[in-house]
Structure formats: structure tokens, C-alpha cells
Image (tube, rainbow, N blue to C red; front, top):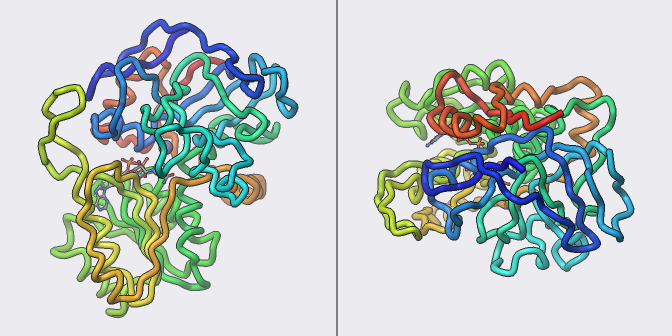
Length: 381
Ligand code: NAD
Ligand code: ZN
């Protein structure tokens, strides 16, 4: 089959790989029809996640048709159109039984924190991802769901991560009615968090970024006020001014690891100018939230040490909540919102590329070229 393959930082190719096979009675094989590229894939692409092995296939946003099921799979059958959450989880361990699907204990032998993720390096289990013609789906009765007939594959695709993750970020923030919510980062995840904040009762939503077209999308897709980082001398002062000098009730970080220009030695031996290490937006979040407010962290920071100002968290009496999103938990509510016409999350997918041209998709998305919010990879029908 054709599959995206990692060849080192900033290098990806489409290669011939053996088709995945059922390895366990709980497995299914899904023929991928649509995949997407996530901001998290960019961290892999930039070479900043540990144990990203040469030849690994990325891709944790997957929609497709069930091709084959293992002998114990009961909820899926060949021919079903499914959406596959980015998390791989057993559904029954201590953590899964508490809804912490992204912290499953049984799917990632290396894990001290996160559970399994498709196509997200061997630090999350080494599972090949779905930027390929086929993908093996473990615990097939637990993760994937059959897509309702009325739901488009593009809308479904955004539920497998980006939109559900943004919604989760807003949920974590425990928004009270009429709260002022600030979102750092107008990528797909931040846009989804901003849009979702309204569903959860926000009175005001302010999105911060430094890319014009993304702030434009924040206004049209998320109905948010926006602040362009280059247009204010100090974003914390600007946010204080905008909130009657109290600070925001809630701040959501949807930036994650960002460029600080530091050069490190990658596992492969290459010297890399890193994206990551300096949690600028997290410290801005701590500074711009009001005393007693909540900071919700849904960006990915990787394993690098991060200089977060703990003293201010304590002294301001902040609540800080974070996790990889257990996305399937968000599906019932989000399906209601989509069915009732409140949102079309597929609008986040602004660019289409065939699998053969996936390297171009990474390049355009990583460089924030051509007004790209998020690339859709068309793999098959
Ligand atoms: P993206 O790269 O498209 O968006 C990031 C945005 O942040 C960009 O628009 C960028 O211009 C902006 N930005 C950079 N520095 C900033 C700063 N200091 N202040 C404000 N904005 C800044 O990525 P995405 O797909 O939207 O993902 C965002 C983050 O969420 C990534 O770190 C990704 O790994 C993470 N993520 C986490 C989960 C989870 O489950 N927690 C799931 C998906 C993605
Ligand atoms: Zn993702």
C-alpha cells in the first residue's frame, strides 16, 4: 500500500509498505478514505518528539471504511464508514474506566503519562498512523464509531481530533456564564476552542495570534474578537486593558511548543533548530488570567523542560487543567451541535491534497502558506 513515511526532520515521502494485518482478535483494518494533518504532526515533522523512527507513518485523524475485523470484534463490520479517535485505548483499565481514554494504561509500554496515539512516534506506542491507504485499529470495539449517514466525512474527520480537542479545552476551562475567554493560538485547535467556548456559555471570546488570515478565521468561524501580537506592545497589558484590568476569567493555550530558536542534538544525531522549549504562551496565559481564574492547556509541549512560572500559579490561586483530549467523550454533544446546524467543523479543512502529495501538505501547513488552516488528505473514496 501507499503510506506516508518519515525520513527525518522536515523530510517525508510516500512509500510502498506492507498492508497492515489483524494482529489480535480485537483489531480491525480500516481502508482510509480521508486523513488530516494536525499541528501535533508538525511537532513530529520538526523532529522534536522523542523516538520518532525513520519509516514511521504519521496520521491520527482518520476516516475510512472497515475492511476486515478480528474474530472478537462485535460493533463493527466490513463496509462500515467509521471515524477513528486519535487515542488508542483499551476501554477497561483504571484510567479508561474513569474516562481518561488518553491516559490508557494498556496500550503504550513506554508510557508514564500518555497512552497510545496513531502515528505519533514510539513514545506513544509506535502504532503506524492513518496517512496511508490502510491502518490497523486496535481495540476496534472501543475507539471507532460508525459515522451517522447525515454526517459528512470532513465534519467527522475533525471530530477525530482538532474540533473535539478544542471543545475539550473549553470544557476543561469550566466556563461560567458570561465569562471572558481568551484563546492563545488561532490554529484549528484554538479556533475550535474559541467556537466551543460560546456553546459553553462564554460572554466574550478573544483570540490571540500573529498570523492575519488565522485571526480573520477567528472572527468568521469563531465569532471572536482578535488581537494581533504584532499590533500590541505587550499582549498581557493589552489583555488586562481589554478586561477592565482584572484579567480574563479563563485562558486556553492552543499553541503548544513553539519556536525559540534553540539548537539541539536530535536522536538521529542531526543538529536541529527546535520549535519548542519556551512556553511563551503558557506564561502569557498565567499573566493574563485573573486571580482565581482557570488556565486550560491543550497545546502539545513534548518532553522538553519548560520554564513555567509556578510561583504565579500559586500566588494567583489559579486552576490549571490539561490533557491530551479523550476525544470520543466529546462526540455525543458535538454530533448534536452539528446536526442542529450550530457548526460545520469541516470548515477548518481549507486545503485538499491527494496522499501522493502529502509532503506538500506538510510544507504548506508548517509554513502557514496560502492561508492554510488545516490540510485534508484525500486517500480514497
Ligand atoms: P497550528 O500550528 O496550526 O496552530 C498553532 C497556532 O499558534 C498558529 O496559528 C501560530 O501562529 C500560533 N502561535 C504561535 N505562537 C503563538 C503565541 N506565542 N501566541 C499566540 N499564538 C501563537 O496547530 P493546531 O493544529 O491548531 O494545534 C495547536 C496545538 O495543539 C499544537 O501544539 C498541537 O500539538 C496541540 N494539540 C493537542 C491535542 C491534545 O489532545 N491536547 C490535540 C491536537 C493538537
Ligand atoms: Zn492531533
